[in-house]
Image (cartoon, rainbow, N blue to C red; front, side, top):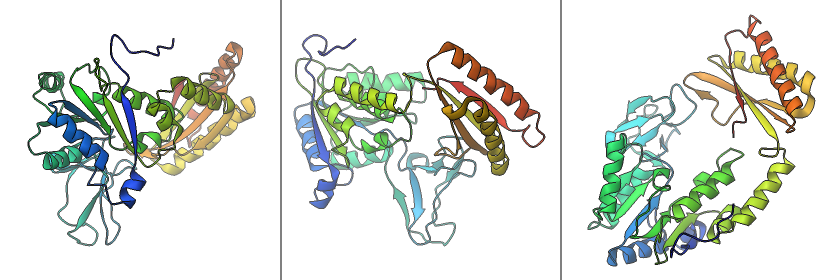
Length: 360
């Protein structure tokens, strides 16, 4: 059901897009904030109104590296960078929980000038406190709201106007209904637009629409400022102009053309093993056997964007099929039978096979 209007007297917020390419070229960009966002924050604070700043990445910075030798802080168990958490003086893996102290110098070459690349909510909080020293600033993410009580305390302080600027991850995008939020700032929309997932556009539109909806929850119109390097991206344009119907039609056409849900059924098969070669061999064998029986409905095997998590290498196989009960039942039966055969092969019996029906 399409609902074009907000409840009561609430007015849809005015959404402005800031092209970060122009900001950098004209040297108007200060740290993490465009000139337009800085002015809007100043106006909100002068009017005793509140501000939400959204960045869907916690921690201080996504990674730390050395500009001399190219060393990066990587997790020993996963194929990801360790995230810098300055408040804890630690590097942390958000997948397996590995922790390490932030090195004082490069472990590879001894260089003391290590570079923190990118930014998360912790860095935004630090910078905003420096820029607006008299403002009351708080952060809402998995680091500051580890318990239900801590989460509720932060929201209570915000409701009681003990917080002027609240910085947070997607925890601040849903369910907040406060009447004094005049401004919502999205610091890096590109991070959620470029996620390697068939639902990336859908999730980006949802997040941007939801966080935008926190502004101006009563009769006064709120303001939203989205900073991006891709102002021409369809999702950005559709969010800016509240074009839900256009988004739905465009995304639906793409899903139909490429045989994706909800117009087709999907099964995602994940094979995991501590040895990369064993995992690849098992995935190729499994996929070949299934392909002989169901033809071009199968894609893969392929290495996902994160090839190893918790010491396990991963290969994925995707099956897309018509929404026909007989075909779906037949394919499921084939998958299970071939999985049992794979487990009886000496070279593949230790490979874990996870089957996820309609993963999206």
